[in-house]
Amino acid sequence: MTTARTPSAARKSASKSARAPASSPLTTLKPADYLTKILNARVYDVAIESDLTHAKQLSRRLHNTVLLKREDQQAVFSFKLRGAYNKMAHLSAEQLKKGVICASAGNHAQGVALGASKLGTKAIIVMPVTTPQLKVDAVKNLGGEVVLHGDSYSDAYSLALTLQKKHGLTFIHPFDDPEVIAGQGTIAMEILRQHQGPLDAVFLAIGGGGLVSGVANYIKAVRPEIKIIGVQMNDSNAMAQSVTAKQRVTLADVGLFSDGTAVKLVGEETFRIASGLVDEFVEVDTDAVCAAIKDVFQDTRSIVEPSGAMAVAAIKQYVATHKTKGQTYAAVLCGANMNFDRLRFVAERAEVGEEREALFAVTVPEERGSFRRFCETIGTLPHFGNPGGARNVTEFNYRISGSEEAHVFVGLTTSAKGESAKIAAHLSKKGFQTLDLTHDDLAKEHLRHMVGGASALAREERLLRFVFPERPGALMKFLAAMRPGWNISLFHYRNQGADYGRILVGIQVPQADHKAFDQFLSHLGYPFVEETDNPVYKLFLKA
Image 1 (cartoon, one colour):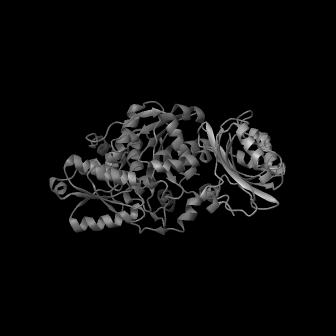
Image 2: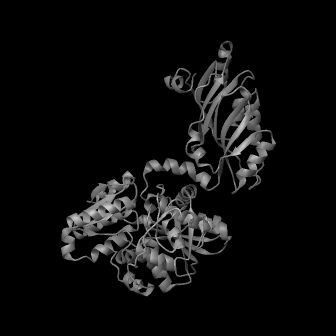
Image 3: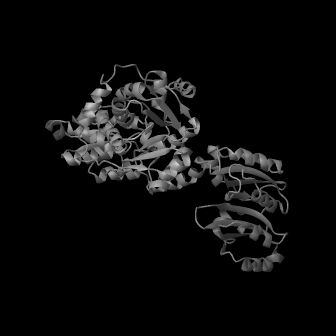
């Protein structure tokens, strides 16, 4: 969703949120004042001038030039060390002697811990309990003392203020401080030095607003014609709602997929700056961000965290909405502190986010040969978006459950946005009642993993795990070789990106046909393991 200054959707949700009391601005600094601060910022004791990479594949696909500002290359894999160190470098010797404290979802914490180590002071870091373990461990490895508290940045912030007063520490704010903002603004200074040609817009993820405030101040002072596009998750959009409401809005809850931007209340100074300098806001969802993580990987072979990919997701959405061509956009890859275990979820959702995969619930008559007829129908589906393109099954889940109808969960590759609705209509026209689940979060997150269970109808069932080659016709070869009297009672398949697929199949085989069935397995030529006597099968799948 692309929003201007007063998006109706944001206005509606803002009315349901608590509003922070109106307060006087933290400063009255103008872009020219911040320009001076940025030019004099001390960041390069710990930061490097990160690359500005031309995303060739993404640029080709979007018909616009996309530049990636590689803040994932920093020592802490995030831009946050710039602002944190700049703030700490301006502290007095007495303040450094007492120590510093901060609240952070992780990246600012690492910047503070690294800066404290560089300046020889102690650092206490209060982090939400939802912070990925990777970031917690990184802070500890840099010498920071970690305190875990609350579910969001705002919860951690409240405790940090209490500890600050109790121990006489200096609070290093992650975004609402002019020195922190100035440190982040050095990114804009580098972008304009590295790319001196036309630049139409810079896209920046927004949590509390420190990054967008620093970059916007520098760019609007030097190149005011360049648009500043703020990017927020659709479930953590405090800044967009605040700008719409013309006062800071406190969100009751924030989404945690992009933990780096999960902020319930933006800063006073960052709100003031964003209200005046951000040209437009774009809100992105989880699937779009997962797809953008994949896009970044394909161009850089680097894996960024969700907040690091938000700007790329927004560029794609912006281009689709405004139908632009030949323009130049820069996206700041603001972080790469991704837990490895989260990649499973990202990979699962990336194809749907790019609309390269569509998901359906299909009702098939529970009769002999209907499964094969359904597979043949899939094989002859029209290619609505890319005539002649490949159409592959990405997922297939089925368990016999009724005597008249079978309900199948199926995933198919697509080649264009909006194609899922056309596929659903085509399948329905062919006699298979179809429900499009492509944009159904319940189906994508849970139901796809829960299709099946024990079934009283699955009598005389033999259960086998197969390895199928990932090539057209592999499944049809299997189905064609089966005797008509053998009924498939369970089928589970999910493409995992390899050149072979792992498939679990339940087949009802009469006792008298066991010898013939064994010969069928032998002649089929696909590696398999029989699991009919597996105790897990007996516990969860066998009635």
